Image (cartoon, rainbow, N blue to C red; front, side):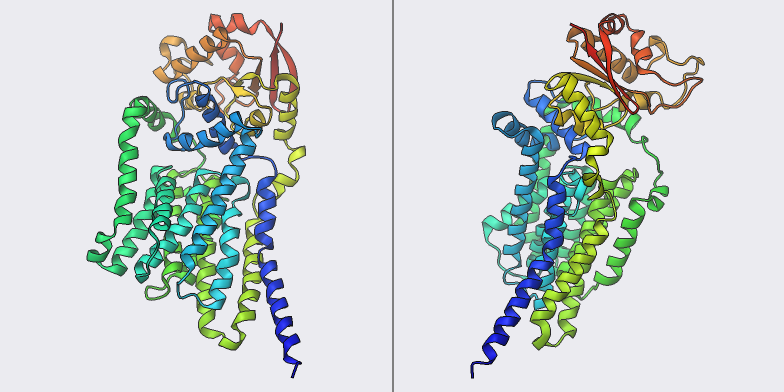
Length: 516
């Protein structure tokens, strides 16, 4: 009579082991995101937020293409880095990880009471934490933040379709985070548009339009949009025209070529697989909603036509989660109930391992493993030796490896833009005069702004060091564009430059330090 007990105990042990194994890919990616290097765009935004916190004015002293919300949010880790023992990169990592934990908890609470089978529940239990961290090197990017906030938002939308009650605090919290995440870029608004359209289709106009949550989200966006010209009048009046004139066309691909690019192309294939597996007009709501979020992320990436890794990552994240949810739901309908408890954990292990290996095909974890040998690490060491905690003028078209090297060296950029993208855009074509550089009276207002402010800021408060890239990112016009030659035509820059000597060289970067 006592024989069945060990069998039950053994089954529980095996299920517990499988559950732990299913979480191994998420834990592996957690280790990856904890390791350097920090994403270069995330590091650049953090550097600007730190400068803004230090007294410089956004869109006056700090010119960037991003709308203000990402800088406002990044003020939180910037303040933590300034007021606590944490430095800026550590504080930002803590903040994003705390957000991931909060979103995982919200997703867990939202799944309660839903009609999930054992396999679907096991798969989602493993895949949601993996999806939150599988961005790897792009962890903390705006696209990553949007994608992870879309997960509980999609689950909440499924509950709304299914007529399930959700606590007010939880529903408002999920809606608030989603509204902020979708407002980070105007392109992201296509995601809630698709999801709310699906909710409207499923619930009917009367019930859907009577729901206060979409209206709350829309109100947040309207308040944010109205606040920009009031708090940051230069953004629409000055920065946006510069973006349209000089930034939009900076990139490798056109709108068609980006679909075949090495980065977005595979993401499109994953999304097409998700459409084939997850899309069922009369099927489960959650896979359909996650798929719509992935399609919205794809549209956002496509219209930007840059082909950068962080544009593709939300497409992959949300498509993989949609595939997992749909597969788990389908298996619950074909696997006999007596085998479902163990089968669910086994399927979760296989699916998490497969998707984890697929996600590892890119930059993570290889960039982290070999970081000490990369240029960003060596540049960090040079900056720490020659300009630790100092102000540095960077004359380069690149964000990486300048960022995160500046962040790790606790150095602050003095350039008014994150890099010389504005100078790149103004010099995308050779001067009509045939000379290598335009004279001041030939320059556009944007180019003259860069030419003048770099020289004046350099002379007014000479930084401890100047980092110069040999590769200007500007077309060859009879000779290479040389940043020092270009700016030395301004007498203020030329006079100040006489007090600098070369202090080191890393690949195609030269560091000059100020002589006492």
